[in-house]
Image (cartoon, rainbow, N blue to C red; front, side):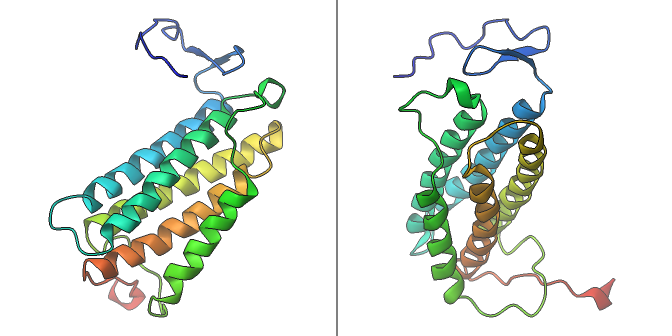
Length: 194
């Protein structure tokens, strides 16, 4: 059970923070940057989910919102994994597993199968929800780059990178799905119009 009785502790005022195992690290350490960017990804997803739950949302918006809620929980588990050195993991600590990656893959295949074929790159846009999902995708890609650097220096969970890689793909397909749900045109890259 998590209890957050005090929100501020003043312990980080000097630029240090602690990992789940108690190790003191600088707030700009690669591990902190990685799970902080996962938190940013979840915040962007929260924007999309909130927009999906707004009054007047189209049929199917609640199903996509439910997937995004699940993903936010998975990202919290992933952040917890990154905030804990492997030697300090608790046996019951929730971690990202291969089943989470497989679920994203199945959802990508399902949504993508119903979308029109792309003949150009999609520009971020396509309505508010799609644009928020594009924002989440780009932040997720930044998290992935940080996690790759972290994995080169320290041990991380074996499914962390596959999950984040698949999630960015899923967010792209979700953005296209959302544009379609809302009847918004997808802006496509038109290099001749530069």
